[in-house]
Length: 294
Image (cartoon, rainbow, N blue to C red; front, side, top):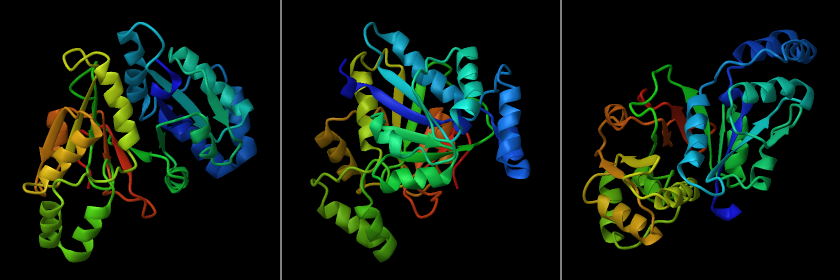
């Protein structure tokens, strides 16, 4: 596989590992105390963080096919190289195949997302996510649900909202400014006109490419569209995905019903939605989706 067909996910150290205690020391005692704390514990592995299970499932995809890796995970961290040594030691302890990283000593690492060719950036830092989105990069804030892992221990299950996530927000703007009736009429009239792509289109396309390498029966990934749309607004969604030549495994048109029960039924590891908006940006992530999103 060529480099441009590989799925690349960039993730922050605070999403990958539980750094809550370290962060508390940074906030209450300052940078110098934080640096001492981390360097004194370089050989003490960090416990898994909210995105650890997701990363492990992503990396396990590489074992499903012979040849070059299908997935790469990049670590992006506001730590320095010195304090980041504990993070790399923890990566080795947990046997995660992560070899590339950027340590920015307090600055936002978002500038390196594109340089690494990442399709997606996941972080516990909302400010970094906003900067990435402003730069045109698919990014989301990871929020812990405190729930158990998904129903599937092996298959990675990813759910997406539609408008302002997979698709552009052009139709959603009509709904917000003119109401449901105008939205429905617009979607009926434009049913055969494909929508523009949203911030997560490229990420879905990369997932789809991996799925095509194995076929639906053996795929390590299962995707779902979970949208508040209902008939007749569903037709434009179907025709848009068809025009993109992207397969999505399940499509749930809920007509405004709460998504939580459906996400639990799907067994999602992660759900990308635009409803928990951070600083008016159009993406947010809950991990796992066993917890309904408000």
